[in-house]
Length: 89
Image 1 (cartoon, one colour):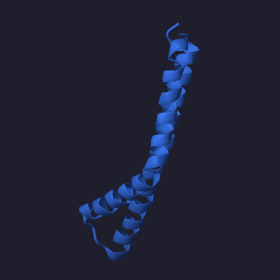
Image 2 (cartoon, one colour):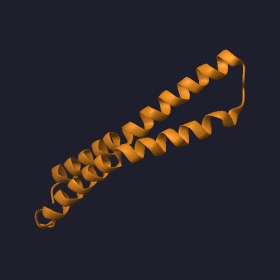
Image 3 (cartoon, helix red, strand yellow):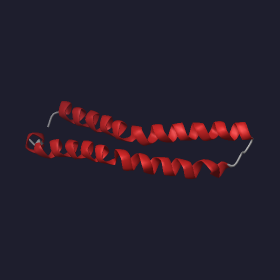
């Protein structure tokens, strides 16, 4: 296996990680920002107030995007396993 193949696989894996983690991270960022604005406006400075809405929003996002995330991961792994014979040469 050449170093170009290894670099390509690593690049694809990193891009897959970024692509699959983006929806929950973006939703968490938006919910955290909204709660921070709410806390600033109401002068409530409770640290634990952000946890429950963020967790719920991430769970809902994973329910909605979970199939898409799993499909991307399965396609990547299927390609790796199908090309395994070329990698070990």
